[in-house]
Length: 254
Image (tube, rainbow, N blue to C red; front, side):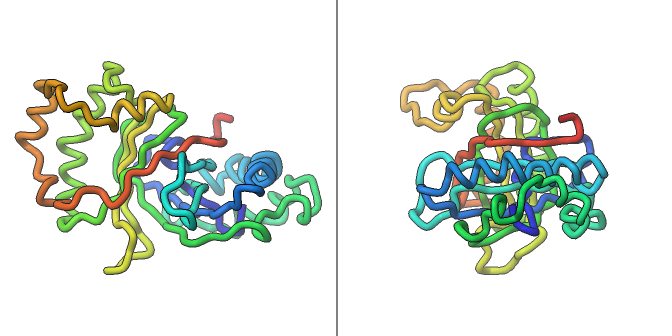
């Protein structure tokens, strides 16, 4: 866990406030170092994060592992640090001297920066969600041509649809949410928004994703297809759809 932790766990530690800011830090961890990395982060650095949560400097922290291999040099882990707001995003308070005492071991036994790399990080804003517990999340990265249209349609059309199915326990989903990028931005950015679909097991994710040529389109899906403008908003579809598995998450209730 670096001096700036990550906040992909915002997808997990959902609260009622949609003004939350999430710092997401992506890590590349060599295969032969994964066990050591996870052990150090969950055994030592999680204690620093928990101290920051307990004293109000963080709302949540989590670590996620990417399922499978996309590109050989792509990040395979992501941290999420959740702050109440932009004004409350103060990493120096998270890594204060008092909080750092919770490591319990010398820095040489806890640090992970020497054998991992941080290819990029993102500061995100939580736009909306349907809260729920999940062990896996399917993250849908997008660069919409109509940014406002993407946010609006997801709130007005897709959220109620997913909320209904989550409550009815159909499709295997257990949560849903959407975040927008605060920083970095620009023409060369990897994505400007993302949505996530939460699940409690990998089989449910795969069933959600797989193509069924002879499957009958349910009436509720057809109603969505008749209204959506997503084909115009993101005509090429999502930039990436990546599955992450939760390694550990912390909140004020833990």
